[in-house]
Image 1 (spheres, rainbow, N blue to C red):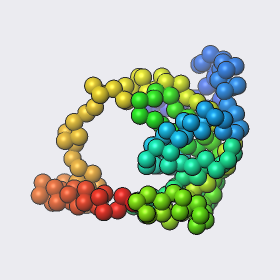
Image 2 (cartoon, helix red, strand yellow; image 1 turned 90 degrees about the horizontal axis):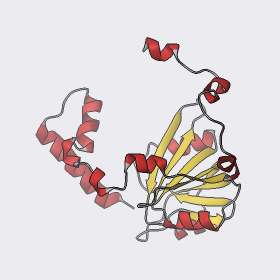
Image 3 (cartoon, one colour; image 1 turned 90 degrees about the vertical axis):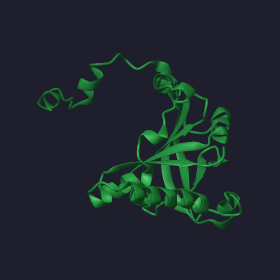
Length: 213
């Protein structure tokens, strides 16, 4: 740890001294509205991650998923994200009330490129919008509306390095405990016996089915 601290970078000037100049295209690719490629990408995407920051400066990132096209393009400068049932921590939305700055990354299975939108968000209960976002006749309680400031595509390097979509990269989920087991161990500060863990994990799976929407 001492070595890490002694080599810490403290300024952007020092940071950039370790890298080549950014390419002109990496700057020119950013734009302030949604073009037809962006719209097509969003329409195909079933999964996004949303980055926010609270008033206290603490950062948060949250996954969101639904059928492809679940994020609605309202116009060239505005998108809307439905908020589906979750754990009711409301981390993302509480942050947005305190600080509207938001970053969203769109992913498409099989695509190694991603789309990124940076902007400012607000939370709405507009009935017509929520009804348009209904799945299985269940509308979300609220939606996150993002005013687009910046849009650009990310290259494929991260996904190709990770081989995320490669079937050969899939790992055996049974090699780690179930979600409920791991959470209970954290909450209780002690290992959970197999029977308790199995029962809790089963309830989580049942809850997924009952409360997906």
